[in-house]
Length: 140
Image (cartoon, rainbow, N blue to C red):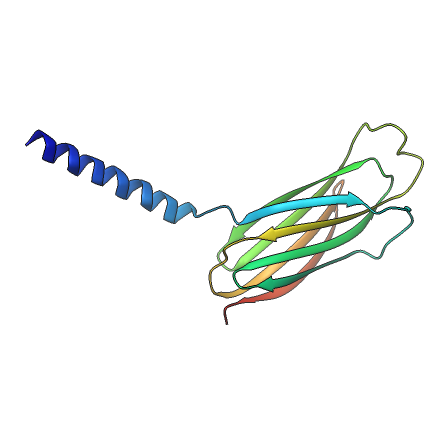
């Protein structure tokens, strides 16, 4: 009887762990890369995407007051709204304050369910926000 109780307990734990995984799901934000655009100068800010099956590639560019910045992505998901915030924060890097910065980034969103989403891409440059909103259709 003890083995049967242990088996039921293990099965219950497995089901509980599966339910937690179903509720939280896998990480949607996949890779994120960024770089300063060589040659400096000014770029026209944009954010766009391309969908490939259940995955999405997000591309964008923007300017910063100097080249002393690093970029960090943050993704929030709410029902059918995906908000990808690209934060640009200053760094203490030497020899970069004497030129305007221009940055390019790529991000992937992985394993989206079929449906229509509002994809909002926010450029957050030290609290100054620019938003780009797109309609994203996955499998429809």
